[in-house]
Amino acid sequence: MTLASGSAAVHGAVVEVSEMRKSYGGRDVVDGISFAVEEGEIFGILGPNGAGKTTTVECVEGLRVPDGGRVRVAGLDPVADHDEVTRVLGAQLQESELQAKLTVREALELYSALYPHPLDWRPLAERLGLTGRLTTRFGRLSGGQKQRLFIALALIGNPRVVVLDELTTGLDPRARRDTWELIEDVRAGGVTVLLVTHFMEEAQRLCDRIALIDNGRVTALDTPRGLIARLARSTVISFTPSVPLDDEELSALPALASVERREGRITLGGTDETVNAVISLLARRRITAHQLRVSDATLDDAFLDLTGTP
Amino acid sequence: MNASPPSATTAPATARRAARTAVLRAEARLYLREPGSLFWVLAFPPLLLAILGCIPMFREVSDDLDGLRPIDIYVPVTVLIGLIVVGAQAMPPVITGYRERGILRRMSTTPVRPAALLSAQMVLNGVAGLVSALLSVTLGRVVFDVALPRQFPAYLLVLLLALAASLSLGALISAWARTARNASAIGTVVFFPMLFCTGLWLPVRTMPDVMARVVEATPFGAAARALDQAAVGDWPAWSHLGVTAAWTAVLTAAAVRWFRWE
Ligand SMILES: Nc1ncnc2c1ncn2[C@@H]1O[C@H](COP(=O)(O)OP(=O)(O)OP(=O)(O)O)[C@@H](O)[C@H]1O
Ligand SMILES: [Mg+2]
View 1 (tube, each protein chain N blue to C red):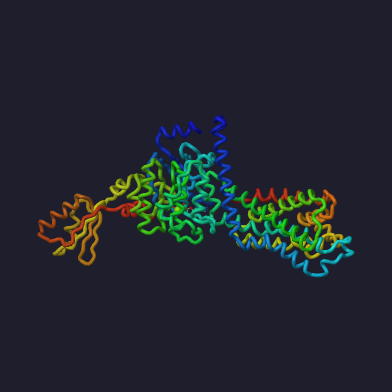
View 2 (cartoon, rainbow over the protein chains, first blue to last red; view 1 turned 90 degrees about the vertical axis):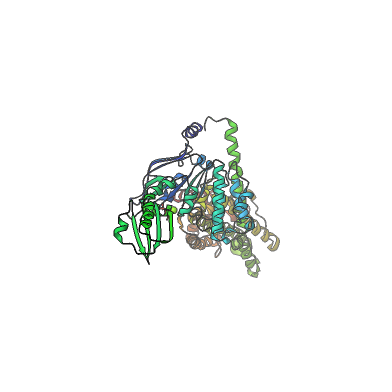
């Protein structure tokens, strides 16, 4: 086992999933998923509801047994070597609870006692804004406070890999930003992070690479920038022209991917080339463009484009 | 792992023991935070004994009972009731609730197996059952002048056997029930026949022949007879001990067979 984890370190991949499949009631909810997460990487998993994200990460955690394929965490099999995997992997589950009458402090103390080399829970509680809630029972915490506690419990064992399923669901905007900083610091300490999220802003800010999962398959695996660059309309130009422009003029623009008109305002999707062409068109026709805005497409756009309806 | 040096294997073993102790400590705190459950385990059986003891007839020597008073007979009965409460009533909703709400699942992502939660529950309910028994015996002795068990080692043996039967019954209910509510319902359904078997309504030794034979084939009917015999100074019949032990084995095997972690 020591040898196996050593060889994983050589390859650099801390989490390896290859050709993994899992079916429920004859339906493949995970249908041959492969990806590898490098040491110290923040790896995102995005995808629509029911895509198979939770199923995938729970196979990595050893909570579910895949029907086929191979899963390794630090060179260990999460099912066969479950005990060893729990010592290197911290998990925040999409759905779980604690004993209703356990206080926050007791939960933190209990879970640190379960690990061989735990972190000090006090600074962790402080960073997650739980210090004022230490004597509150789990059952009386708000949804966001419960979420913060579970983030703390995922990190408390000082893991090499942390798996976070819907990291900031239920958190207020400030707590969300604080949590992002915390995760960045955790990664700076060399921890590998596997993150499931529905927040594109979160994925764009945190993730080095993202796997887009749809219908149990990886439909795209790239950096956030790379995913956006795949869009035919990676740039969005919008303006209100002083003189109406007709469709013919617009459709002649190079690399144009979409045109939208609303109350005299025109929104064009395209590339940098399109931007230049629009500007010269406007100059040529001496048209003033009111409130001209040029923006990059977001991960949101990429997500919608890449997970289109089946 | 097999070839690891001793220091590497003992360190995780000590760590695991420390972790299990932490689980037990946390569960013990939580146990003390359930006043309802504590009432049924610790207060209800002695209270029942106290109420029965207030009836004058219960304190008079009866010919049916070989010169004993009903209250003498009812101490072992309330002792058994305490043991049944922990297994059939107190434990199943807790364990089922832990499974239902994903608490067992959350724990299985840690180096401690969720079995640590189950064994903590067994230990705590076992201890509570024994404390309850001690309270009933003490109350009987101090307030109603009931003699202490004459055949003490046998009494203790039966007590532990009955406790094991009750906890294995509780484990089986926890295995079958899907929700905590469900577990309480099943617990209540089995509770009353069990109470009958202890001789709460009619002491087992005074039951008509056929009925006695049926009751003595149940885990707590047999335990009631054995406890009764040990209380008056006889070594309990091996058949009674065997019945309770056999039930325990069957219930445990069934619980292991059907228990699910999620
Ligand atoms: N234990 C189970 N039994 C039966 N079907 C299941 C089970 N777990 C998941 N599924 C099914 O598998 C599919 C994928 O579920 P999963 O929870 O992995 O989705 P997800 O991508 O995490 O979705 P969400 O974004 O809503 O959390 C769903 O269609 C779900 O109904
Ligand atoms: Mg999910």
